[in-house]
Length: 212
Image 1 (cartoon, rainbow, N blue to C red):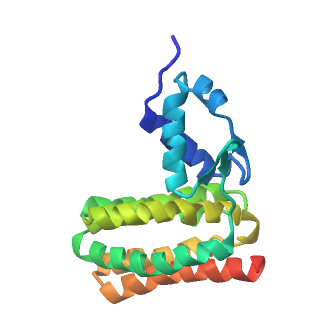
Image 2 (image 1 turned 90 degrees about the horizontal axis):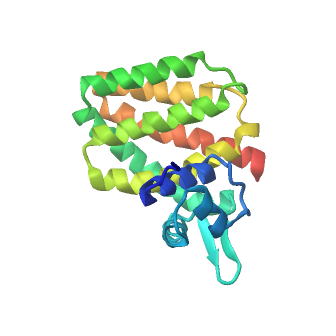
Image 3 (image 1 turned 30 degrees about the vertical axis):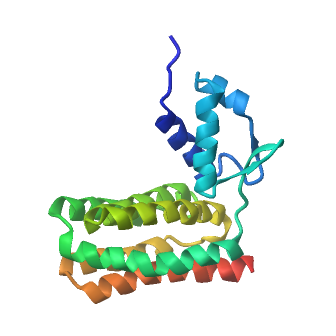
């Protein structure tokens, strides 16, 4: 018996395919093929396309289809301007609210990151970077902030995947995230905010240099 997928499951699968560039920018998704793949009618696929359109991951083009959005650094600039303010705020809240098991989780992530090599382990590094950020959001204890940043991180994570050819050192992950982890353990609010902001700034400067 074929598995019947829930709408939420299909949404997460398609979102991940777009973010991880399994669906390349510009690709037109076929509603009928996806309905067949997931053993559902076309109605939930249309609903998911609308959700992904709201996430700025798909463009719905009348009489043409649903096209995966382009990755454009100039468009990303506005997103980085927002995350540059909100990620440090999340880090500030996390300093006050993070639990020991969450610190332990971040330490495990940092241990893995330090063992990775670029370019062989780049995709693993991006995945762990995202888990690190999700843990910070969870520990911030602010659901509204977590919801906003989770949406924005879809776009920034996609940019990380897109920029693989430009990243030549694991230090772009370990330096600033390591400092952020230290700040959380030391309960140093200013250091936490600074390192969270520097993590974004280093990536932005790197891709500006390479892509613009």
